[in-house]
Image (cartoon, rainbow, N blue to C red):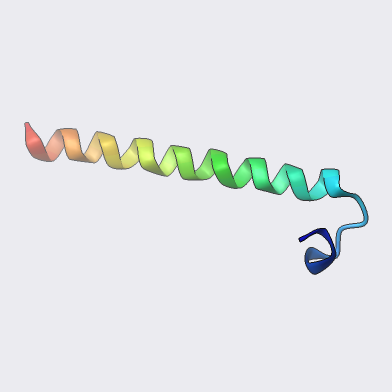
Amino acid sequence: MKELLGHSDIRVTQIYAKASKANKDKAIDSLDDLEDLLVD
């Protein structure tokens, strides 16, 4: 993956991987909040 993205250091790739997980978790939390509004 590091080479595909053109990163010279795997740590740079890991930063983006963590950011992606954080964004995914945030999106899931938003969907949970929306579900709570629709169900109530």
